[in-house]
Image 1 (cartoon, one colour):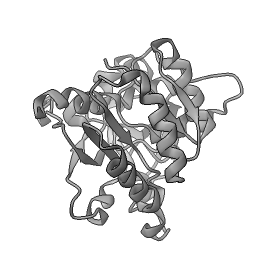
Image 2 (cartoon, rainbow, N blue to C red):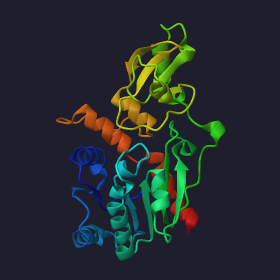
Image 3 (cartoon, one colour):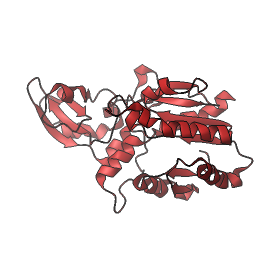
Image 4 (cartoon, rainbow, N blue to C red):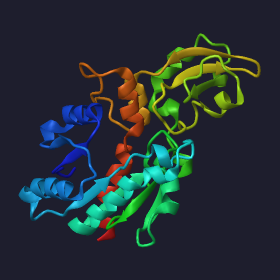
Amino acid sequence: GVPVALAVDCWEPAARIHHANHNALGEQTVIHELGDLEADLALIREHLKPYRNHHFHLHGSPPCQALSQASARDPAEGMPLVLHFLELVKHLKPDSWSMENVVPMKKRLPEWVPSVVLNAADYGVPQTRRRCLAGEGWTAVPTHSQEEWVSVLQALPHLVKDLTPFRFAHRTRLNLDSCDATVSRRARTADVPLTRPSLTLRNNTPTLREVTSTHAEKIRSLTVEETAILQGFPADYVWLLDGLRKRDVWTAIGNSVCPPVARAIIQGISHAN
């Protein structure tokens, strides 16, 4: 609901998908690797020129892989672009700003940076995705209580037709670790009943499977479009572009900020002011 002066990503698949869906709205998508302070400031300031009288909100989502608890990498590897974004905030002095990352980022932020942990399910996303949101000038007001959380089946009601041939439909699970017939502890921790919100989407293909105490049977994988709906995207969002691998598309979905959460932040500017 607001004009976007500039969208930047160094990963071409993400930039192409964004451009295909938002170019008609006048958004400027640039493939560029952030990290050079002077070059980044010049790029942003150039694109801000037509919007001198607008409220300026700056958002960043630095790569989170090294900061994730599931990563074996040194968390310090994930901090340079986090700190670089904070330098951009200091120099550009936006009217409001936000930065999204995994929850462990919160304890590594400088003391002057305010932050909160938001659960996407509280904003109508059929997924219990928890992320740290740092920033100032906004407050994200939840739209759903826990009793109102949207389940996988509510978001994708057509899945019912895939369950009817199975005798124990109540044992159907959505698996987020691309597991088929595995009943290991790891596989089971990635399962969630369809009557609840999904667990956090990553870059794996979600799988519908029937699970008993001794074995599991794959029903089918979710489509790209179904996976995107669980991330909070509208059903008509375009993902499958010529030349893009499906693996890259699933990664783009799992790496994205849930749109209802982003919307709550932008709408929350008025609440803060």
